[in-house]
Amino acid sequence: MFSFLKLPKRETKPRKQGITMVLDKGLSRSDAENLMEASEWIDIIKLGWGTPLFFPENSLKRKITVYKENGIEVSNGGTLLEFAYTQGKIDRFLTESKRIGFTSIEVSSGKVSLTLEDKAAIIRNALDQDFKVYSEVGKKDPKLDIRLSLRDKIEEARNDLETGASKVILEARESGKVGIYDEFGRVREESVNKLAGEIGLNNLIFEAPQKNQQVWLILAFGSSVNLGNIKPEDAFSLETLRKGVRGDTFGAIP
Image (cartoon, rainbow, N blue to C red; front, side):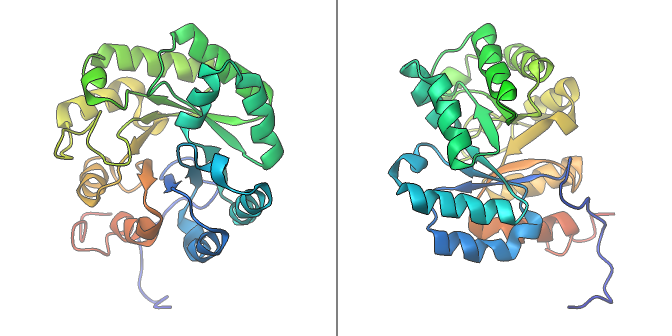
């Protein structure tokens, strides 16, 4: 509809940039099917935290199939991998992830302590099983995250990329009030610019669950910035921001 109106061009799927990673917090299969009306604008769906543990297997597999049939990557939430790590069951976790249909693996250390070497070993293990790997940098507890210097985060991100991670996710949690944001959800502009400059904008996925965060990142870095932890109900509205057909970015997208 309205095909006579010209919109800014966007890379088509499978995209390398302008990625939208949606957080599935436990959608039913019918909700997942309804979400597929926005499938053109969704690149990755992350099954948040430990939610896969609480679905009947057949229901979970059917939901994953719905996503994959619409050209969407399906990933675990990093917390589930960390839970497996604490029990010494990473190998079994990866085998099970493959069996139920995950196409990518998120490797994080938001709640556990991993050395760079241990994290790299998990990344290599996942790559050996033909997963695409996304690493995550940052802690879920603001008091712990603030102890990580920018230099620490940059070193970890570079190590993850050199090991084979496709991109690095910058932790912000579902709340958007930790890591690259302050306790009010405001962007830590100096930190974000430093991380983008040192790691490379194209190598990063910024978790940005709040609209003000999405707007700031799009205006700062352009419509092809990679964004994660997007609410399912915001998939369409985020695309209007990317295309400049919403007041916050109107006239700002070339």
